[in-house]
Image 1 (tube, rainbow, N blue to C red):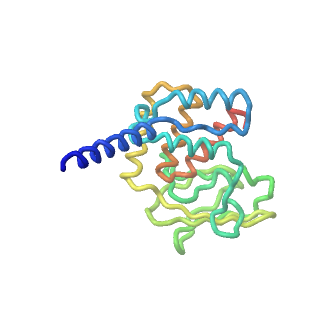
Image 2 (image 1 turned 45 degrees about the horizontal axis):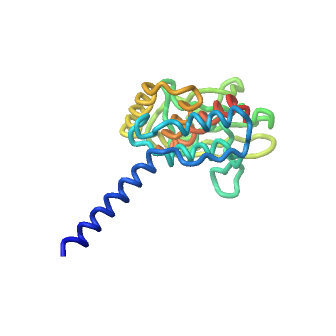
Image 3 (image 1 turned 90 degrees about the vertical axis):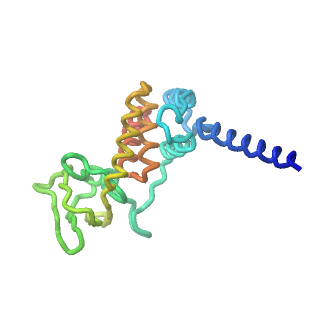
Length: 217
């Protein structure tokens, strides 16, 4: 009567081990762009072990950010509204020492008419002297809403600040990554995966911008 139970136990152990092995290996990486830098980046990334580089990170996470890096698809913040411009905070964000960073350069060519940042009914900031990049100091943990109007479109976004526990976890993973000694491209791909896992999509997309410049995408 014990034999079937033993077989079942061994089967479960084998399945768990196989799943763990899969999590620790980088999945096949699509290469829609056959350029040499992209092929080399994929080769180097496949040679890494995410479970050792950043404990808690999986190969699936790296595969996801790789697909996002090669994708040109953009999504909007609110349904049926224009895609949020690159460089603008949306969703959960990390605040730097100077606050939350805004970068309006992606839509500068559209002719910026106005920008407004608010928290509820309170207006918090408008860019001074037509600045295209600026930081807004953190002044509370509630949701922030911004509206950017150009001659072409009106953009809306909303963000909240990552809480202390989320920030600490991300900072610990980034510190672990610093010790790994990866090449610059692989390191940025891991950094993007850390942000992606934490739903910090603005930070992830800023890393994408760096990678696309390095890989001529």
